[in-house]
Length: 221
Length: 220
View 1 (cartoon, helix red, strand yellow):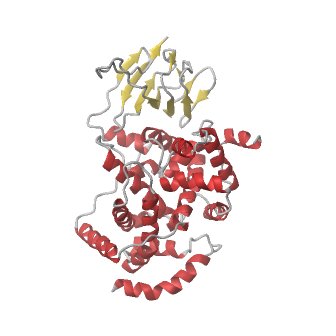
View 2: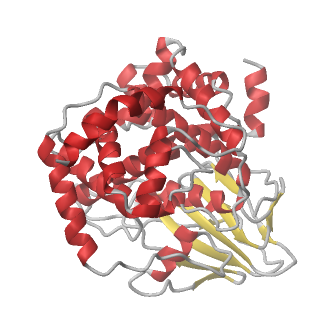
């Protein structure tokens, strides 16, 4: 879990993650990376000190005495009820958020064949700005050469992946800009599973408001 | 009546709180952390009341600072309630080796604030709570408490000495809840300028930066 990774989210993303202002889909990707990267976890802890310090140095607001009584009353009423078992995931190598998304989906994510060597399963994340999905690339499999219609963030969850530039291992965090054409290949040592968030392109509608163009995941070239 | 007891305790406690020093045995010994441990271990209501007295006004102030879309002042008391109830419920899981009580409570407040906003504004069900994103692996590498404490002190010291334009952006991001992009359009600054001001601030606070940025920083 504490192996050195080469590809990390940039500082701006970690700062926004720490401040809680990062988009939900990207927070899912960052948190998946954190699962594998002790360096970013430690950086994040330090970033949290900024928020903590800003909060505690602020001018305290007036709090009505009754609020304390309300809180104690609520605590007493909750304490009377049986406590829910803490939900901790054990015995799995997948990041907690990814596991929870898979488990709590109304139905299990369905793997769909995208090409001869790539399967995709979309995840429901309650937001529409990004398409969040898992990709499974078979060992040594080639993905179709593709362009991106929006920015794409990828975290390798299992196995490895390579393209013209580098080899990406478990936990590596990749950002691909629109127009960035690439053709990643699955590593030889088994299936590769990735988490990805793709910025949803602007929906084009005609003057009557009908959807004209479906969102394209991949443009085969 | 609990509150009266607290008031008498308060003066001596307050005096100790500010000057708490970390002893060499690497135990966190600041007042708030000790109180939080006591809540976690002994369900200590008096300790909880003291924490409430100190943190509730800070959490409320943090709530009032929010400029998130969809946030309104009436939510501030709700947030204080929600956070303090969580503090009571989760205190047993507080690990003083990882964070001071102040930082721990800040993270609870931050997560609650986002969850409240999501509940208010989202029609779609998000299957995650914000604290899920901070879930750490069980076999986490133990971080040296001393190193942590030093970083906390460094942030505290340097934050007050940051140039106004860097301080302003950190406040927008952490307190108002603005993204870098929103901060850039509000301040009428290019996004790159906002990001580089944040980076300079992080550099001053000596917060570890990713290797690809170390190069970049050395050229600035």
